[in-house]
Image (cartoon, rainbow, N blue to C red; front, top):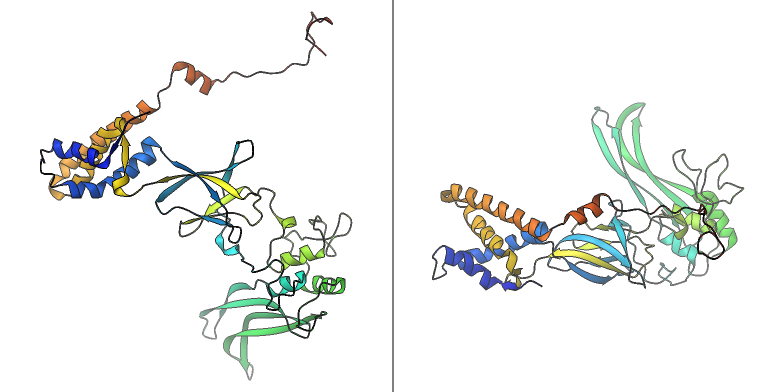
Length: 379
């Protein structure tokens, strides 16, 4: 195990080397030390932190430490201690996270009806539609499509789209038009909550779920009957029509997921790791790189000269009077980093042979010629 030097001991090397016995430049080098430590940890030393984080199931994410700079890997740890990698997928975003106060109850009356929760948590879709004005200029509208249910049980669909206004047959303007379409009527209780009845499910699924477009695979149905007529390809392993309807409302159900769920992504602000809503584990092992506070920086003894040369390079690279000196320091710093990397990754010929041509064993089920009942060959 290597001996680690503190930041004060590391700063003494370049200061004494420059005959700065009074340490006047210590404050400036102390400011550069954090960046040099980051560079060495990420490129040469590769000394990460490995920590177990509990996933917040309300947001399906974990908050990274304040001093982290880069995520190296995310793994699962089973009960036998084996680590399973979790892959990064940038298709996973934080916009799909939905925090519900209670299970299957998103309305203000806490009814607990699953169908009411699905309807009142319906995700409206937005689309930017471009049309023309009478002077042939382009105009864009943000069109919102949503489905709502009133207290009487009437289900309406609200659509928005550009509409051209004509006056005496002359095109005068283009406006954003809102159209309300009556879909069906469902049974509600005294508070206006949609009840979980077979009639309501049939009515909503038949009216709110139109025939899919040719490029989409519909959900629902069974192994013999498709969910919509004239459909020859569909996913039929939903538990009920309710699962199919929840997908149409913008929710992701367990039966309608990509089988590859061991994925994660980094949020846009870089402070959280996002996981799918159906991620099947409560904890993950995160391997991350971070730089502590400046006073807590330590370096192994074998990297002390590399760290000191990095400080001299950072000190000279921004000074216009030390351009040539910065080039010399940068060359020496790069050579020392390469030498340290080779020293930390020594390999023997036997190890290279195992890496390039590992031995393999091919099992054979052919009985040997000297088979007898007294030996262990054959079966």
